[in-house]
Length: 120
Picture (spheres, rainbow, N blue to C red):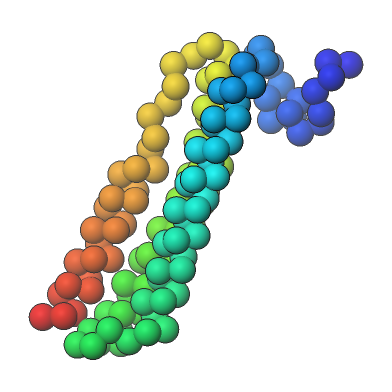
C-alpha cells in the first residue's frame, strides 16, 4: 500500500508525490477557474433574463447561449488543466500552457460583438 487513496492512484498511477505547496497552488488555480465559469454562467443567465434595451430578443438569446457554453468550456477546461498540471508536477515535466485562455478570449469577444451589433 502506497498510502495514496484510490482516486489519486486511479488518476495519477505513476510519478512522484509533488511538494504539497505546488499541489495546493494547482488546486487554488482550479478553484479560480471554477469561479470564472460560475461568473460566466451567471452573466449568461442575467443577459437572457434582463432585457438589454435595443437588443433584439433573438440576439440576446444567442449571446446568452455563447456565454453559457463558454462557462461550460471553462468548467471542463479547469478540470482538464488541473489533471495535466498535477501529472506534470508528478513527472517533473514542463508545465502545460493554459489552453483555456484563448477559448475565454474568443468566446467573450463573440458574445460582446453580438451584443454590440444588437445595440446598433
